[in-house]
Amino acid sequence: MELNARRLEGRTAIVTGAAFGIGYAAAERFAAEGANVVIADIKGHEEVVERLLMTSPNVMALRIDVRDDDSVAAGVARTLERFGSVDILVNNAAISAELRPTPFEEQAIDDWRRVYEVNVLGVFRMCRAVSPHMRRAKWGRIINLASGTAFKGAPGMLHYIASKGAILSMTRSLATEFGNDNVLVNCVSPGLTMTESVAAADHITGHFQDFAMSTRILRRAATAQDVANAIFFFASADSGFVTGQTITADGGSVFH
Ligand SMILES: NC(=O)c1ccc[n+]([C@@H]2O[C@H](COP(=O)([O-])OP(=O)(O)OC[C@H]3O[C@@H](n4cnc5c(N)ncnc54)[C@H](O)[C@@H]3O)[C@@H](O)[C@H]2O)c1
Image (cartoon, rainbow, N blue to C red; front, side, top):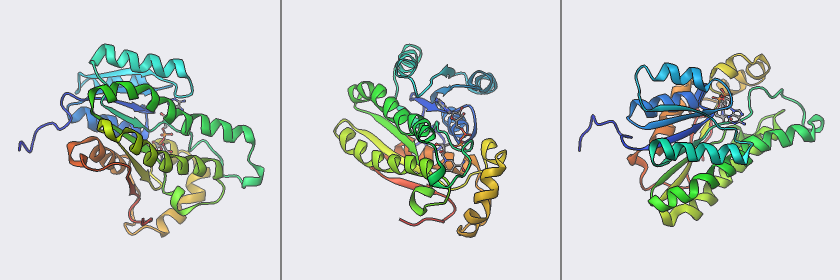
């Protein structure tokens, strides 16, 4: 075994919401491991690709809005045209830090719809779009992003937490539907992670930081790279007999 080989050489990955935070860290790691990487986002993707191209020639920026069927279909088609396959999908795009913690009785139905459109239906749309290509290739890795809050509960974010609970369930059921075609579906569940969007959101850090830290075994702030490492595991050959599972990357706050 070649221990220093770039472990995703020849694979093509689409990472949604990859212009910032955890998605960016995963995309950067994939590119460093030799993958062709599509930085899919609705903002910031062009700038990020300019930066990544300095070290990784096989990255491409695409505007993919996971709320829009046509945008998703066009993004997958463009990926196939440029790289010839789509082997790895990271469903990372979500509405999260922009949400203000609000008691559930005061949450607007429209906010629930907005959250579900991206966090749940966006994942469904992306999985549906890559499915024929991964099935035909008899190889695929889908990695979904949930949240530790879906296990432990937290006040003020019922719409978001419900959407992440859906992701845990979808991961298991998608794994059963895709298994015969060697498409593995797994999930990474971060705890509070200091991405740019979270660090800039006082309404989130003020509300959750002490709570998150007090329940952690590893008492330090989590970085986007901490989560990207778990995402990479599910993209790599090392997880070839693992499907329908969730790794909670939260410093030991949740056990399951
Ligand atoms: N950071 C945390 O504390 C934390 C904790 C638990 C779970 N998570 C989950 O991890 C993932 C990444 O978190 P983050 O903090 O890096 O998020 P972030 O807010 O920094 O990045 C989310 C990205 O998604 C993109 N996006 C939003 N709507 C989109 C759409 N319609 N189509 C395509 N892209 C869209 C945004 O432009 C952004 O680049 C999310 O799924 C989040 O729910 C994060």
